[in-house]
Each structure stands twice: as structure tokens, then as C-alpha cells.
Length: 365
Image 1 (cartoon, helix red, strand yellow):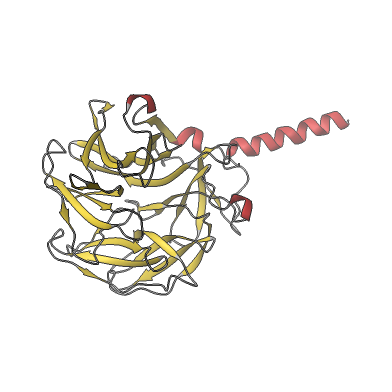
Image 2 (cartoon, one colour):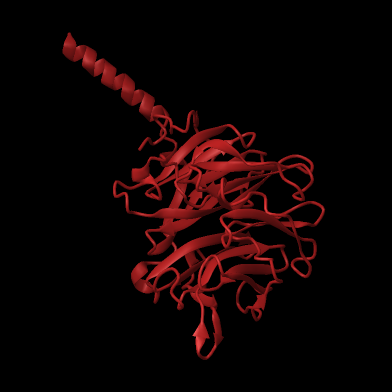
């Protein structure tokens, strides 16, 4: 009798797990954009992705290692079912005897022109913003232009174009603590305005916002933080002023995030759902996908990466929704390549995330 009871119990448990295994069905493609042995750089990080009428384009920074002066911006395009060989499109050369590393590219397309914002400088505290552009899907690029003083451009995550024509760029600085602000341009970067810093950088340390669009003039930002949680702030006036930050129900082990407003009005978030005890601080070996109807209450969708090696890194995600409704996600893969996933949410099964705990049954780590 004991054997029968144990068998029935195990079968029931397995049925529960089987009922909540969404990632096995929703991930339609998983691929490295390039093989590490096929490129000249040893390390890469911080990808960004867009979709245009010509196809997908991805950019990232790569070189000997982060902060090395040989780090430049690379681009690859998805053409005829394959990713093109990475091409260098920007560097930090100042003159013959001086160059600086490049950082955090961010792509944006308005349909006629693609802009690639990126940072140049010896470190995150002292970098500045630059931008290049192309109107032929990256066949040629303009000369680099330095952004105005105090304007860094979108710091990691994509800008949002509002219906009134304003491009809202989520930005942050690290020279006086971690502080967030928003930069706004109504003419694709010819002129700018910026908000004040939204936090003091001392009691609350946040950077690298990602923006969600709610109805009317209402926006939301979610931020990476040193305060153990993904932090949230709201604007009711199209990004000019913002509320104080409040902790979300999601943990943050000091790692970048990204989110997107879906066509059906829901919100999709890619992040590292890793506990905040000291042994895991800074870990990035688990990468997660969550969804929300209101930007506040989140449900688990899938675990995209779950590596038992706590030193493995799957980080700095970028996420967009394609014109066909499919989701495209890129992220740093072990600092050796950039990984691309295609996700179909049509038949997704989810479970609520409560008390910062990833629910059992959604590819539980």
C-alpha cells in the first residue's frame, strides 16, 4: 500500500509540474548571434535589438574586456535567415595617442532612420553620450556626434516614442551615486530637455530605467537598484515629472533589466530573479521572464537560463515585440556571445509571483 501511495503522489506531482512547463513550448528559437571562436574580440556585453522593415538589427560592445580601451560597438543583422558577421561601427578613438572604451549601445528606429546611441569614456562615472545614424539598414553610418553636455541618451534600454512625437529616453548617471533622470527630444535628437534627478543616489541607488506605456500620458519606469528590489516610479504627464520610487515585488541582485509594452496592453519583463542574500549578490546565472497586466502584479512565465554555476552570466537583456507578435530577446551569454530568443506567448501559462518567490512549477530553479 505504501508503494502505491508513493507512486500516486509522485504521478500527481509530475502532472502539476507538466501543467506548468511553459518555456518548453513558448521558445521558438534559441541561438547565439555569433560563435565565440569566429570573432576577434574576447568579451562582449550589453546588447540592444530593433526590428525594421529590412529585418532585425542587434548591437553590443566588445573587446578584450569591459573597460579596456579597445572595446568598440559591434552590429549584426538578420538577413536571409542568418546573422551577418559582426561589424565594428563605432569606437572611442580621440586621436592617434588616445582612445577610450565604448559602452552600452541603444538602437532606435523611427522608420526612416536608425540611431545608435552609445557611451564613450574611461569608466561609467566619466563617460559621455555619442550617436551615429544610418538610413540604409547599416550599410553605411554617419560620423559620430557627441551629445550635448548633461545629455547621455538612453543609458541601456530603448527609448519610447509617444503619440505626440516626443522620444522619451530613460537615462541615469553614476558620478554622484546612482541616479535616474529622463531625457526628451521632439526632433530626433536635434534639441533636448531633461528632468531633474529622480533620486538622491545615497539612500536609494537606481540606474538603467526601462519604460512602460500606460493609457493617456501615464508612463512607468522600472529600474535596476542596489536596494535589493526592482524599483518603480510613475509619471502622469508624459515623462516630465515622476513619483518617488517604490520597491516592486521582484528581487534585483544588482543586474540590468528590460521590459516592453505589448500590443495587447500587457507588460513583459526580462530580469534575473535571484535572491538578495549576500552569497547571491551580483549573481546573474538565472534569467527570467515575467508578465503583468498593470505593471505592479507580476506572473512568472519562464526561466530562460538556469545554470548551476553561480559564476555563469546571462545578463543585460533587451526585449522587443515584432510586428508578427513574436517576442525577441537578446542578452549577454557568458560574456562570450550574444544570445537571441524568439518567444511566442499565444498559449503561455503563468503563475503569480508572491513575496519575491518564483513559483513552483514554472521551470523552478
